Length: 346
Image (tube, rainbow, N blue to C red; front, side):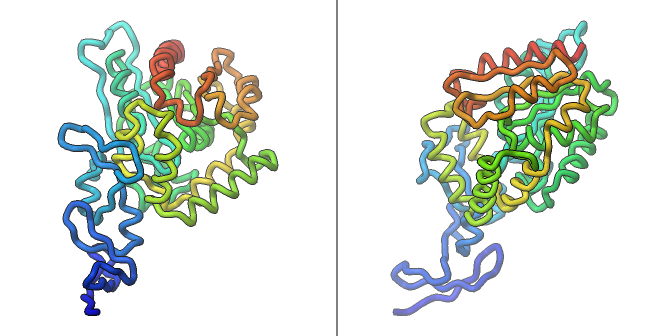
């Protein structure tokens, strides 16, 4: 059988493809330009595309497509010329008698700044300005090393550039899952920069003083994310959310791509943060959101530790780790956010 020698378009690894489509060294075609990739590149540069009308393919594993890096950046809904987006408030919704409040949205593990774009767009109709950022190791910052300190520095640079004229009470931190756990650390390091925080999907202590069960979970997740490709992890996520999350799920979670190249570092960041110690140092209100189907061994303890007694906790019955994108809860969640932000921004 004859073979044709090739190179991966991205990493230039040598590939060999058989004349009957049989492969050696894992040759894969880019879903857009059809140029050849090695399996490693193809498995990490994957997403579920939106068409020109922003209509997604069905939420199923077969909708996940692999691309060369140039095509991946073209097809992704992320603008690779920048690492954060700003959604300005609707002109008709601006109330001159209310303070100008900016919401800083920080996504979950493996995600990107696309995660909360529809939520921010809805709150723009209430008069809020939003900044949606990529964490280091994610989205357009995927090649930036993810550490707690790099997260703090990234947030600080954004605040210095985009919120220099704001009072602390006019900036609210909003984080989900990794964005919430890292958020504890960011809030502790930048105490004078925020007037409040909304933290979601963070009811379980996974820090250095966590339970044996939580420690085992972090270990397992670290091994899983360190050994699987983005495509495999995306397939796992699709299976987890396809019947539970129905609020712009593909746009938020899959059409920008997923980024687990630094999966072990994501786990290390969460496992390093000790929320109980940090909460005691914060003088701002915190609104916690969780779902009853998620792991939650510390939510009430952390609420009780909050010095600002305007802090509160909402747990959604029947919600799980993806409740933020569950239509049963989104409207109520956004309403509660609006109420909390108005109170914290006074």
